Image (cartoon, rainbow, N blue to C red; front, side, top):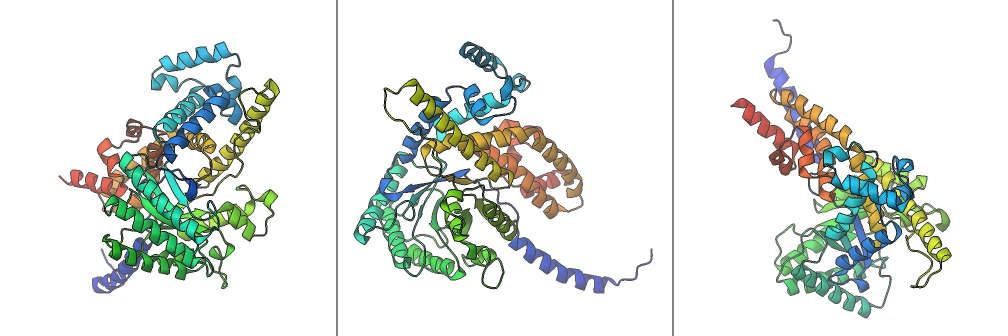
Length: 479
């Protein structure tokens, strides 16, 4: 066979290309396999207690059982698939529930009511087990601008409560604080609160931080604000005996300037790079962002088109970097207008209608986020938690069969290409498919056993890395 290219010339060119390819892969490693919470609850620092997350779960469960005492009620309120076929009489609902309870998981899937039944029961189980996945002790919008002495005292108390929660095991799996922004008028206050909180917390715990602890820096507009946070982290780590790189941060997308700068460029990647590897997530601030776009309060919702524009710009700027993205919050609270124990029938009905309307809005907003690839959002009130999980579980369960087919097909194809050494491209694509199941598994939508239908083993799933899965299969094939 005749060739025109000399090996030496070809190798020189391909080696140069290899350097560029590796640099690109380092910048865009693909989706991170670490667990990402499905939401973050922002709560005022002045209200935070060691058992706040536990109490929020109790309130959330009571809210669900009050306004949807069974899965049929929830299905109707949210208009789940096949809700028209569900019974209306209480006795018939009880009979259907008993029937579904008695079926095996495989048999249950053949029933029209399977999805609504499964989503409801998973919500109840989640609220009992782990209602809050992520919590931010908020010293910004949720706390407001108060006298310095009051914020100092609150920072100390909040740190003590976090330490107490660590000891009692009552904290959420992910936790952090949101300080004030590094704008010229608030930078001193933000740094002081960060210092007081961390110094107090580490003194109380003997130098230990909670698992998955992070500091949220809001209203970031320029890379220098991120760089300053990194330098402060270094000083705090040295002063408190923490290993370099221990402290992590998040940024917020809540101003038009973080979407497009004065030169008409999207600065998000430069802002993330300025964190020097410490920034792990970017959260969208619905109401600050819409306000920065000149949207009046009445129309400041997650459904506004300017939010979708910001979402897509963020996805384009940070796609493939491994930075977790979070959507914003719904500000309509599912709380009835009437309070008390002796309400009239009309008042109870008005409460139910009000709550169900708020539920639908939150459910549709969260579903819209999921469809657009934002698997995390904000919650502001415990009554919102049931709808967070309703949208999340419905999204994953209704997409499960299709996702199984896609990943199973890809695994089979990857087994062939792995033998040719084409691991990286397969791993990058496969990780995206695998992450669907990892996200569903993390939030309780599916079990580990349900991933086995993809052709992966439990041992492979537990690696959380498609690259490692391919490496393992390649090693076995070579034997």
